[in-house]
Image (cartoon, rainbow over all chains, first blue to last red):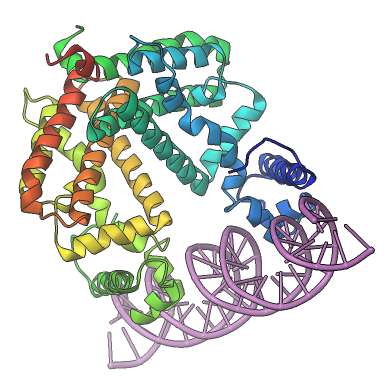
Length: 216
Length: 216
DNA sequence: GAGCAAATATATACCAAGTGCAGAAATACC
DNA sequence: GGTATTTCTGCACTTGGTATATATTTGCTC
């Protein structure tokens, strides 16, 4: 819809307003907490009417979550862009490990103060946590579609596969974020995070039966 | 908390009020839709003040979801109650298949008109869907704890295992519910549901690698 | 059974998220 | 410059949920 072909004054202004609202919101939320700041305050700080704010962001939660929108289809894109001969799972494993090396916040392995405050802010606000779940669900469906289309999997099989993969990635990120929240540094945690990721992807690849049957 | 040891007039009255509110809510929601009915209307129908309603149910969504509360720990209980020598996954597989046979609504394989209207009502209300996600998350954590305590699994391994299992069960139920929503009868669907469940649990047991490596 | 303390219910007023609407202001287009 | 079209704004309104202070009910003791 929003082709970035030609700026145009109107488009540029819209983008600036969008950014102004978002920035004001994040700043206020990080400072005082999500539930402690009303959308009216955000609107005032962004010098915009409440009505306009809701024209840009359909809900208060979107003021935070819209920043993750790109990540929603990340796994799906990785699967689609994998090289021939690479299984989807191998591609995703490689991508996740690369994310750990890069300290990509989506892996949870990032100890920037802002990242820490952000995860804490989210976990303190139930409605935000719920919104993150919807985000996760979107990632599952996008990945399922990618698997269905590029890996020759039946629809249900693709969905069953996708939900397992996304759930494991999510839990790994939660684990890393919990370590960060308890004060550990990303560098100190890195080795453990890699080991945990290997465990998670091994479980996905070889199945839970491998726990009782021993390693393949 | 609420020991059912001795009734007592006060307790009985509370239970009756609780049921009255819940029944009024479900009836109105099924009739007009979740978003189309206000909590004030529910309170009026139940002949109770709005404040009292919120004393019994912390949120509007709880008016619906509290009925599933028991199911939240169902998988965890199945794992804890499994016979010696049975793996958790085998126990859960057996339980799920039994649920299909019994047309347990939690498996999605139930074509009672009320069940159909209920799933439709939930899917039409985003806040209810979000609440179901929280319910699912609770089931994951409960199962993780059960696996940790009874299957000798490290904490993270238990959580990774639990999220995979619950996610697959959930997706299987979604699939069945979708079939019901499109008019198929539970009896007609049963064989397919069993086959899908076998697929799902096979993926869990043998891993996603089995898709590329072929059957074990 | 009267009387009192604790629990529960109610009415009222209130806050915050989100929507509908009518009009003002800005932008694009000619 | 004039006009059609977006976009923004102010205002009133609905709804979920909470605070407070007051009334009602229940349980218990004598």
